[in-house]
Length: 146
Image 1: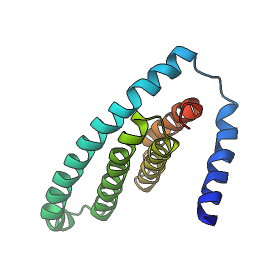
Image 2 (image 1 turned 90 degrees about the vertical axis):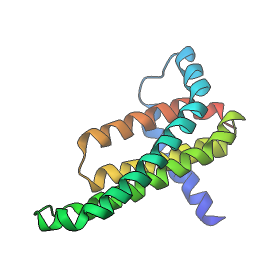
Image 3 (image 1 turned 180 degrees about the vertical axis):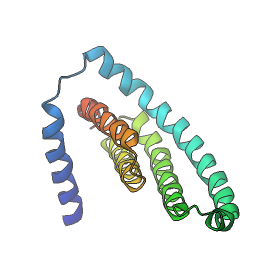
Image 4 (image 1 turned 60 degrees about the horizontal axis):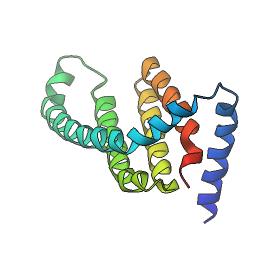
């Protein structure tokens, strides 16, 4: 229970930063709440299929990539595994998001955290920016999930 309380404190602390940003109009928030379950389902399925197929290709060709001088092949495997974890979290969120349960929002939040870690590992400035936008949108609709 102590770990859960510390995670909730962290989520609340981060929310303080995002509350300082301009709020979306109510219609925009309602739209996000309406499409979020289906977005998580579709992206989760596509992410799992893509990660598994990419992992197979990556593992098949990683030796050749190493021989060819590509030194970042290990980062690719880490990012693929993180992508798989993120996609599974999105799929786990789907049923709870449909019922507007806080647990669904939490799964999407954790998926976004894993995506941010993946972007940091790959030094992807665009990925980091997209994660920040994702966090902004998530915090805009957090009050809808109880």
